[in-house]
Image (cartoon, rainbow, N blue to C red; front, side, top):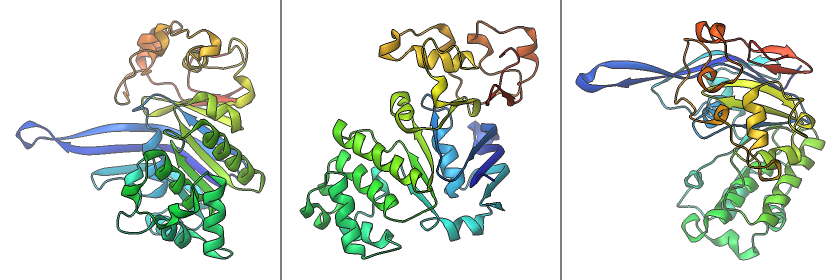
Length: 308
């Protein structure tokens, strides 16, 4: 049984247009994902594809004008709003994308120590700071006294000292020195080897492939493919969806190839056919009629009528 299972998740925002007309915009639709204990699932995709919204839905921190449908389970039990509040910061830890998530009125060392669930808080905090290249005197600083990269390392420290069973990391490495990025990735890998389940959200496919067991490719608010990390090799022939192959082929070592299939991602999901169809070389009339369902294919999952 997966530790975390998300099935057919949808997120819709209610907003007001001109003349106070109310409108609803669906930004995530039919999104499915599962993570087992000791597994790292990387979630990759362009900005606006729904990666951070997935994290916020799991943590129960979506804004009030958001409505959520679908199913989420943690350790076999439904993730209700009250259960999320009980688990958050204990069995589920979060590395937020924004460094503004730190308490501006509290020294960062104390913020890390408050997250420690086992062992001596001061010792665990200092070990975490040493692991991520933060000088001992950093513990006495306030968030405004830190660079962006240092603040991100503090956020990672808070999550990793918690002893959580599930770690959701939303873009944890931007602004970090390359050596610290590698240390952070090694730490995530070590946590997974000790049984922690990790959702690693990133736009950096190379970083994802360095540690992930599986990669979930997001596009326009849904999952296009869930592939094994080892499927990303060569020309991408083992990948199932053309968009996944386009992401892989766009990496520098793969020639910076940017075909039309990777261009112009819609800002929201559309129920009228496949959102990716107008940029896809494989598209046919059926793709414009109804959005394809996520299905199993070659030890992975794909949302495409024509994938083989």
